[in-house]
Image 1 (spheres, rainbow, N blue to C red):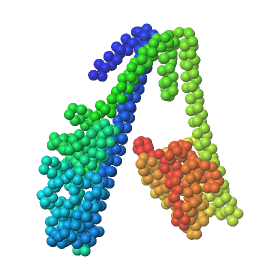
Image 2 (cartoon, helix red, strand yellow):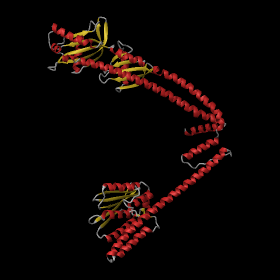
Image 3 (cartoon, rainbow, N blue to C red):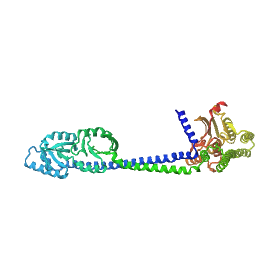
Image 4 (cartoon, helix red, strand yellow):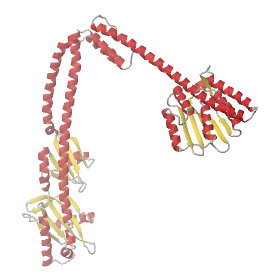
Length: 605
């Protein structure tokens, strides 16, 4: 498959290469101009589509949310009205009175007539006493309500709701011999304020056409259809049929639309009767009702389609003009020039192994020759910079090493001077011999690298010198595995650390001290730890020392020993390795040294 594609590509390339330069440039302009313009036009059309759809979605979502809030406030008002019997002592008394006399009828009628006008959409309000006597007040034109037939339903709903108000979904009531009305009901059990027992039921019948006044503005603005479904999935209102929803519409609502309702608010696209729709919904947290508006996408996108057609025509006109311009300026571009641009891009990305082969001696050929000479000069300069950097690094390492030797020799000669001034002692000869070993190890440069074994021998000789000066003051403990002893290392990395531990940690300590050197291999690195039980250092001093080692900053606060060792290790092994120090006042100091450990190299040796 890949080889077939390569052959086809090669044939196309050969066909293009054999064309005259003017035609080549025309083909190039077709791709370089028409494709971006077409792509931008597509993106613009898509962006316009997304913007219009998003705007319509946001607008519909805001309107459904506002409509849902309006219905919630309406229902909340009705629920508050159901609590009024709790504050009327006469109603509380008559609800528990078994007999129905003129006073009871009068009191109940007056109370119900007070509740009835609170909302214009209330068709009827009912009150049931403790003995199932029903009192009611209805709107004008309603002659038949049949409350007795609905009593059992009221009781079951109110018992299920307990002390909370209950909403009965959409249902029909007979208002006269030939007419029915669609309503929903809000009812609550009435409890005695003294005994806290159930003494009756209060019911409001609300005309379902309440939703029309709330949702018609939504339909007018969105040019869609709004419906309301209760928390049981039953249709409360449909803008297409204000009086009664058909069973088919109910099934469609439950199965197709409500199946996409997953959150409190949202939107989705759905196909109904072969036509795509945008559905935006809001679910009320108070009533559980879902308010949803369905808008045909054709109504939303019709302006976009007109703009898209105009954009296509404009794009074609621009492409035609670009091709015309391409034929005029094609003679100004040549193949050698494109070759040079291609090579320059390779150089820009770091590839200096390029060479331009000019075929002609015109201006482009002369430019190519200068380009070749420039590449040669750049490579020479890079090689010179590399050699200079290596020389500088080597010189820095030697300078750092030379800084350490005079410091060490000074301390050793001071020890000899003190012994010589005190008295003649045979130990001076031994001290001088050990000093010679130390100087020979530090000065002789026949080998740049030594082994860990040599470094440890050098440390032992150095500690022997100090033990002559400070008898019974120091004790040395070396624990380094045999596998690490042949490891190559630069000179004088352990002795300056030991010297620092002796003069700054153990010498100020009262009584004898112990100095230990341990080694191990960890994560491919050789780790050596020089630890003393001397006076240690405080937290501020420790932080300043570690910062100085990490940054490599110059300064005399901590001397040159540790800093020089750390700099030499970083120059030789890389900036990620070096020294780290940990210490506690009165408990000693621990210096950890990390260098590369090549296990395979150790095995060979």
